[in-house]
Length: 529
Ligand code: AHR
View 1 (cartoon, protein in one colour):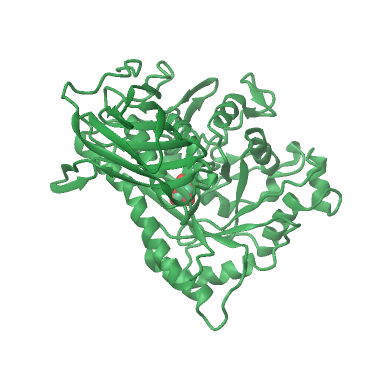
View 2 (spheres, protein in one colour):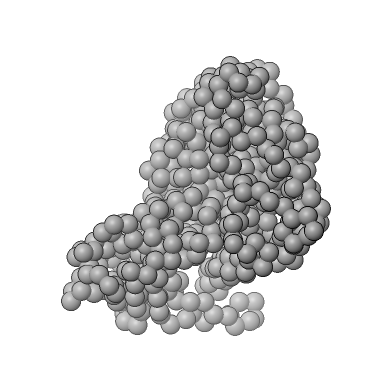
């Protein structure tokens, strides 16, 4: 596998195409980019929690109170702001009470994913099949605290009564000494309340979360989200939104909630979740050019989903009090590249996936008024992972470097920017298709402008002129992630085969000239005055 050490080498010998242009309007802000767009999702599935996050206090693997230390250290480096747990589909079969109190007394239960075809290979054995509840609310919140991330919990609407949602909020947020559940929390070593703000009211309620009709889910949503104890915490309640761009689900839910003779009013209802998985029939490691482009195109559909869902929501919630929470996304390939049989839905992550992740984050950045939270599915040993690990072996995937490169957008003012380059034309399954050649996002924090962009062209580097309107560029630094082989990925033997590295960028006559390598993610940092 080719290494990225050769930062200035492009995939092909083709001369860079000098026909790409980026124009950034320094004084045209689109709104503040919520830091929470850069979050992660963790579920009790396969190797995510057991093997990934949780190794146990007595493990020889370096850990903080049982949590894999290297994971924590790496997540701190990229400023992970929020983590969602415990699912996913697992959430709607989970009783939070099983995961609190003394470890020795916690019950074992059959894991939701036991019925999945991927779980067959485990032959009814192991923690992936029989949930040991070693990792519960305390352990999850500690994991978040170690990182400095906000916890985002998903409540069980399918199989627990609404009172249990209230009780879980009480366990997490009631003041020290105030309730029996606060005492139970204190017995576990957590005297102070967790002050959890973000709560999902179910998950995929159109499917694994209850198979509801939108009107029926809306009525459950009213019941579960009315008069939840707040303990002074500004709760943010997230409704279970559509599968992909299902507009009917959103229309019917919002209509029932806002336009009936009995409209629902709750200032804490601020989020509407969206899940978008791409590439379901594709292979993670074996693919041709056409699949490279198709996967990127399918991931790029995120922007259309954001626009379409927003427009439907606005027909009922005219002040747009509810914003989008994209709490599951990524390319999800057919099985076969998991690093251990216990890693249900585990898959390798190539440079193509890094581009897919980057263009998704750019889409979020371009719509800061619409999207308030994003959590990538999933953090480790799963679909679009940032890390793969097994026992004492650990690696960061190309996605990790993307989140590292993009972290400086967090909390910045999104800027209007135009990206122009010729489109890519390709054939996929006998049909001709197109994809943009270059796209990205820009943001400003004080005197620093961050520009991130993706060159989707798998063969041609692109010489790009970057112009800033309204301010002067004083200095530029650039970073790129790309690889000589479009299938490149990191392995335990070569854990840094794909990683970000400095890229040459020249500043002359107030403009930046930079060659985007073929199939690359690029970040420019412009010091401005
Ligand atoms: O991320 C894996 C699963 O995909 C989640 O549990 C579910 O919400 C979605 O269908």
